[in-house]
Image (cartoon, rainbow, N blue to C red):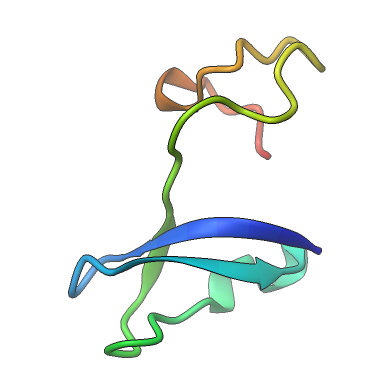
Length: 64
């Protein structure tokens, strides 16, 4: 389980959610119930591992 940041595609609400990797696609907005997407802010906590540059904003898909 990981604490991840999400953004609602409908209302724009940004929130943190404790989820397992299997439940990522099932996260709904707590305000409107809309679909969400992962929101990346700041540096990656796993920077330097597996070729990660540490910049999620320009991530080429390290999938974490």
